[in-house]
Length: 341
Image 1 (cartoon, rainbow, N blue to C red):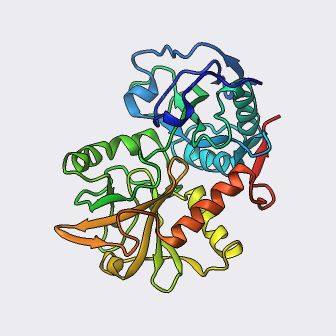
Image 2: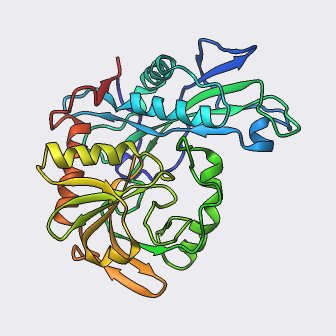
Image 3: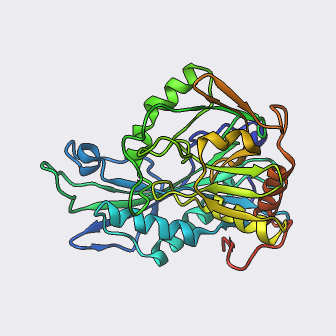
């Protein structure tokens, strides 16, 4: 299939309308079979549950063109499982794992000419989401829902590709913590917007959130997980019940152990030990892994030996290995790569 006439190398991380999206409706206690539609607009009652009480959850994954020309997605089964967990936590009837995976296949296949070519640096971002759609007044779950998937071609999440970023230690707690069940909901991101806009005004790329109880332990940013490398080459990531269980982070830990032969662990990380690390990165579906050059803790600058000009050596190996797996240049663990057929 011929690709669309798009300047793939200069894409930003933003929305661009594609030809098809997927929609399934929940009514009278069950989900329908779902279908593709060309209509990108959604018409809702003014009192819809999603508008009044933010009853919504979402996921994010990507489709890639591999070196041998196949279209693939990365570990969609884990996205399905996480969406189900989030839906259950917000009293939303979850779609089945089978319907989720089938919907991803259908919507990516229908928009395959929007999947950027291999080597372009761009990908097709896939955004599944569920929301309460019928009128609800009074704090209670909706009775009707829509499960939708939109796709859009995107460039790098952080402009400049591997340019290291600067983070501030944030004074705000996340007003809507993920909590038990690890909710990844639109509400959660909305509640972090004030802090991220303020950070940008002050010249920072992101916020470092600390644990709400003691404000001594590193948790995550508004849209990505942290990954650190010690000076003796060990990979560590924060352990907390309130951070998102990142699929990218879990994959990177496995890559560190099984592909690079490194020690890797998930443990509590204290903000006071940041200066003891050699490298720091942000990882997630959108960014994959982006190097952090500097963390500013209330005026105290903590610069990582990798510097502000390039990725650290281990961060770079992790990035190159995971993206190599995604793009088909490195053999993937069983089940990680799902071909669109």
